[in-house]
Length: 196
Image (cartoon, rainbow, N blue to C red):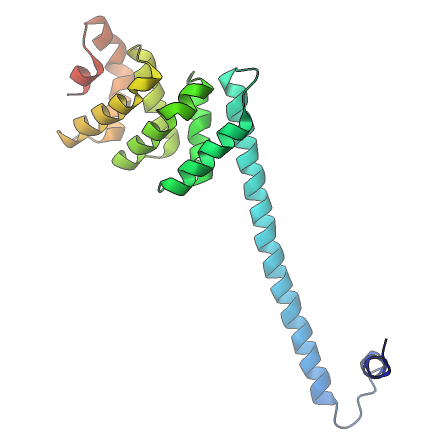
């Protein structure tokens, strides 16, 4: 420690301010208080970021487990969720939440990453839906009508188109489809005929 630094430290540590140093000491106290407040703010932001990253990681792991695929590539799930978060109006966490719901609905990893997620995000955007609800409507339509993952775009188009052609919303059509879908299928109706 240099002599000057030691002298300044000694003055403040022992409160020997002399007649001209009381303002300097008060200034250092204010600077210290401001530094503590700034540090607390930065620590809060860092803590929130760490919590969000942990939540994202947890959701990705749950989605991977829900698919039932033993060798699921979680890095691919993360990549797709981050990509959808960057390319759409939804966050990466929202995309991960939708992946989890799609996986719970029986979609395979390759189907989710191969287009079902993208179609679900399109459906959610078109209908102003929460991603979990859009994923539920998507899996319900695919499963009820025995459709393949490649038909996910047609499901989104049918629900959005049906809502646009009527006074119904995408949400109400999605809920109604859950009720009448099996009967419509038994009657020989397609998804498009059912929501028209």
